Image (cartoon, rainbow, N blue to C red; front, side, top):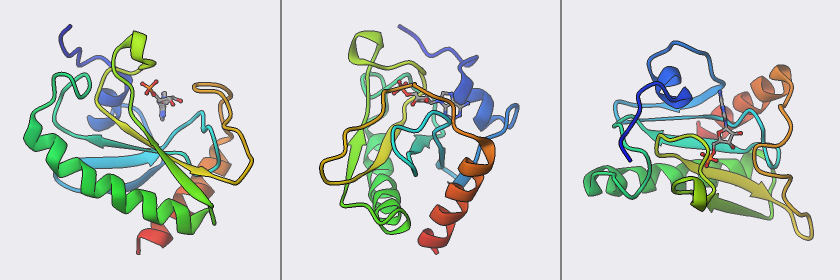
Amino acid sequence: MTYDSSNIFAKILRGEIPCHKVYEDADAIAFMDVMPQSPGHTLILPKAPSRNVLDADPAVLAKILPLVQKIAIAAKTAFDADGISVMQFNEPAGGQTVFHLHYHVVPRYDGQPLKSHTGIMEDGAVLSANADKMKKALG
Ligand code: AMP
């Protein structure tokens, strides 16, 4: 399988469609998942094109994990979470639905199950407020 630059995250990276951005640098971007599995569900993407970890440059993988950690720590603070799930899916059989490499950071609470993956679209105002909470926690 090859990278298809018409995927929705490539469009976000090109600025063709909007997102609720919480972080951006030369190599990566993080924004709110529009169908959060828990409030504060954030996606972290390297800008370099790859479908997933299976075709990613190892140097890109090495650089993205410290950012995933930074976002996870901020999400735990911003959403007063008991824990964080970091998830990453590869190919349809692996649960992936958007084919540009990304990591999910999902705040978790003791005894609370996750909402379903790609379930219900969150209200834009809620996503915007949650992005503000993340930006504040990131400092
Ligand atoms: P995956 O199934 O791991 O490929 O995850 C893709 C994620 O992207 C899902 O959790 C979707 O809710 C989310 N998603 C899809 N479209 C958008 C979008 N335009 N902006 C933000 N998140 C999105």
